[in-house]
Length: 226
Image (cartoon, rainbow, N blue to C red):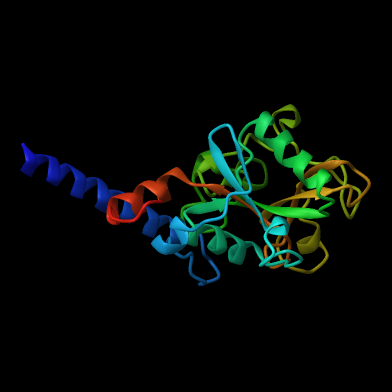
């Protein structure tokens, strides 16, 4: 019985690890690396607030990162090293919770885990057209509602060229594609809403505990309290 249980646990371990590696490889068309969790950092992760069973980290609330702004992938890696990931605003309740913290703490904007599918496999029929059906929460691999279903998301109705979000403004103007999702606070006098933003821009960030990363680290490191 113990032998078969061990086989099951090993199988789960390798499946989780394989999924983490596959997702890391798929999501980085730039060639940069999506980093795995660091057990010691996971054990010492800072939690600034808990909400609906999840722990959240605010970059502006940590003396070590207050005032810092980093690009989207760097923010993801910061979070992932600590068994967290950039926040995924999967429900209206969580969305309003995070927006309230942005306003209370006078943050101009933050990164989320939201991303437009722009890597191998994004030619799937169900993701077409990408600007409508290709957005997802990378931390949870959860698709967002189509961008034209305005009641099912929180995209702003305004932006830098006066168009509803997402508008891919920077690419239209000759720059980088706007493939990452940020929450902006009255940046265009449009409220606190979602905007598509080029991923190289630098912003504060919010991390959210990630169940898959926590389970992986706990299994691989039974002697560390995570």
